Image 1 (tube, helix red, strand yellow):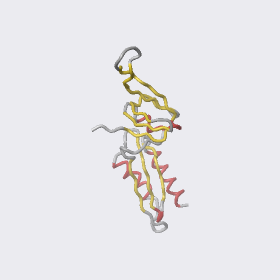
Image 2 (image 1 turned 135 degrees about the horizontal axis):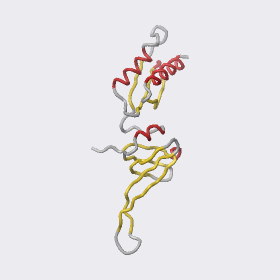
Image 3 (image 1 turned 180 degrees about the vertical axis):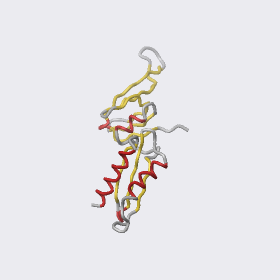
Image 4 (image 1 turned 90 degrees about the horizontal axis):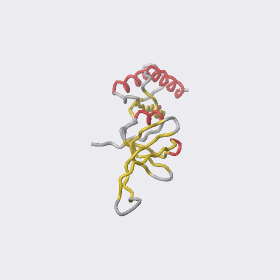
Length: 153
């Protein structure tokens, strides 16, 4: 009952902020509410405050004692939903599947697949030495075990 009430308030708050989307939602012991958000243009501190208040101000602490934490998905958090891939087109990703690992620039993303592109050194077809070749791989999102944005400093 408490969880349903919180979920309904969260959904209403996210309807008002269409560029935000839910990554994770949990209610732990002692009614500890934890919400992880991401956004098409990122998540600001104000976004977290607004969503927190939309939930908190519509619950009665006399009825249910609770705590609430609303946070953004961290820069090194794995990508978990197709919408996150779409917002990261153009960035370099590390992607792990059951068969192998990939690291490349995300050039396309749909609800079902992503496409990575990278340069690789391969032996020349004739003669000694290596040449640089452009590689491209389409990967089904369902095959991805983990994907993270590669951060450059």
